[in-house]
Image (cartoon, rainbow, N blue to C red; front, side, top):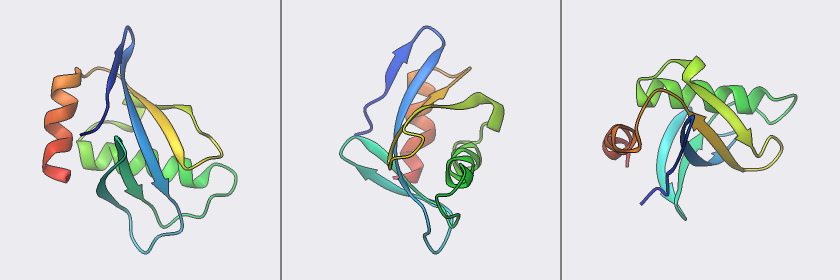
Length: 97
């Protein structure tokens, strides 16, 4: 189960990033975080941008609705998802798991 946190400005989604993978995809759940693989290597924020774009594509959201809150240089990241409730986000994530 993905541990979502609702705050005033949106929903915080914990993500486990896997840069340098063979393909861009959401690979399920790990320790309460959504696992996201991207082909981009982790240099100069390129992998973070790729993870953000993959989340937008997989969750059918606009890239502008997704902001990186923490974890710029680590695998564990927190993204703020704007304009969606925790229930709607859970429903969007369910088919990906």
